Length: 326
Image (cartoon, rainbow, N blue to C red):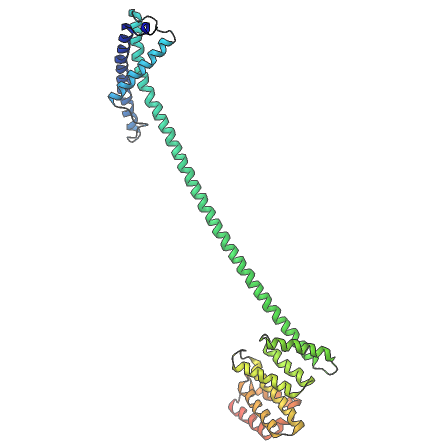
């Protein structure tokens, strides 16, 4: 059967088909090149796809004609290659097949390249979108991080403010309770508990100067003048060591200690205690913001009723008036 298929007529037809296919490919080449030139003129020199050369077009046409001839033969379109009609028909088919192959193949390649280019463009666009989304996500994450930091900072500040306010409130409450406990008739257990709480704060350096003053005041009424004087000595030492900032209670510490020394003097009549009281009065006036007001308060204070009559106090008052006449 192979010998029947391969014969002189078949070889002649294949050769003729190849030649005619090359011719059809050349026709397609020149026609498409003309179209390419026209398209380029309207597209700023950019073709839709790259056209093959003359040799490539000829080879494409030959291959296409042979392939198409085999296809026609296989389906029974060409049966007898020895007749003139069949021969002419094969030539016509070859030219048409060569032209068609030359015309179709570049367009298929061009369309494929165009689709691939569109895919690349879309992939690039998707990549850009991904980068944009990633950038937005990072920016959002950074904003969220800053918001969390601000919230934590605000929380910390609020907690600190709450703690400060609570401490101030507790201090005010304890001061009021210490003052109330000085009254006669206060149950011993009550004033002792308050005194222990206040002294614990003082020992841990958490007591304000006002609490130190009121500890001494409670000790003066419930314990002894010596205990009250010792407490004020410790307060003044903390002022001098800068463990407590100097405030209005710096001069008040001298004022109260002067009272306690004066009360001891009235009981013992020891001149050293009167002199210590006068020394504290002088220190109080030296550090007071308004010495004249302090002098008036001393003159109205029952604890200092005898001291303000002394020549020493009168001299201090006159000196203060001369120094600060306003």
